[in-house]
Length: 99
Image 1 (cartoon, rainbow, N blue to C red):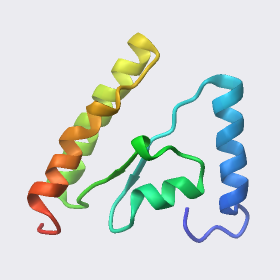
Image 2 (image 1 turned 30 degrees about the vertical axis):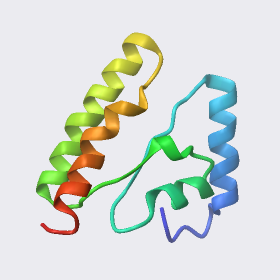
Image 3 (image 1 turned 90 degrees about the vertical axis):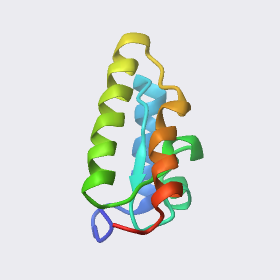
Image 4 (image 1 turned 180 degrees about the horizontal axis):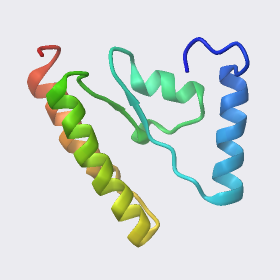
């Protein structure tokens, strides 16, 4: 949450690191109208887990589709291949800022 007064980026980053280390959690950062990689980095989320997307109906629908697949894959194998996000990245490159 961007306007939290209780949680700073540093606090969130520490909590994320704790969950990664203690429980093996994976974090994926989806960002619209921001630099997802830069913003995710503030929270300790790796660049290959930060994805820009178009915040329109097509982009949002694609996010749900890709994330459903990523979660299913993680449940089956315990890993998420960075390539699974390529469809979202291609959509951003293809359609740019158009809605």
